[in-house]
Image 1: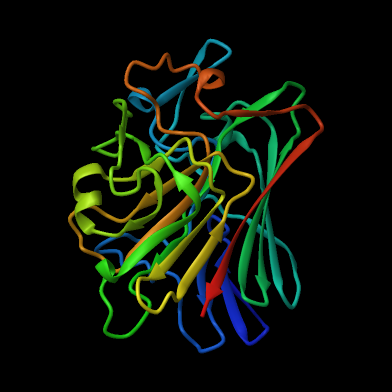
Image 2 (image 1 turned 90 degrees about the vertical axis):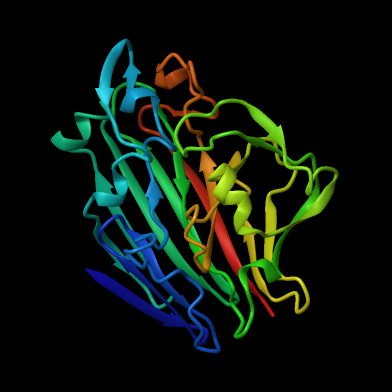
Length: 294
């Protein structure tokens, strides 16, 4: 079931299925999120939990025991409860059950809150450990933004501008599954700007930045400088993706705690890069924000 809020002259909608943000309309009435065309990519902004990316052989090990799990986990298919709704926010939650325990053997509660801001929106994750053991986890956002955003513009008229100079290093994951090493994306190396081309994604699938100095990136039109400012202070990795070969009019900016499995990885979840652990009775909170640049 979809729920909609309006504030600051903008509106936001999210679905109880996956607590997925599915619409954000700015003060001009312009939709900023991808519409979720099922013939290309049906998502809008799915939540990735308790794993990010693909595991080895679609399984992981916890405490020596093997569990089956799909790429990006199971949360995008779960039905959440709308806990609270205000003029400017929607707060959803979901708890572990018999089905989640088959893939992830921990008692947890996940809260997701989408909040309208004067110039955009934020998404907050709160991961609660309701188990008696330390709970390792990965989590990520996957919001897809319309690109181009302006009438008459093309995807290639846009660029990514990072807040700091970057080394351009990305993980090599050409089939979207296992990481096979790293390479330097030369147009970005030593600079702050990466002009967008569909060919990057045709060749490399996602651009996975594992060693960014920045925690802010702008998705903007090269001439007008209009677009989206994306902040991900609480996250370790940024994935940038659009469907290879589709030449589609969207770009996902994906803040991750976690990473696809490396080729040859052991499969032990606790040993995965960037995995975090929350102690029994405690919780971790992470936020990312998207602001409109005009």
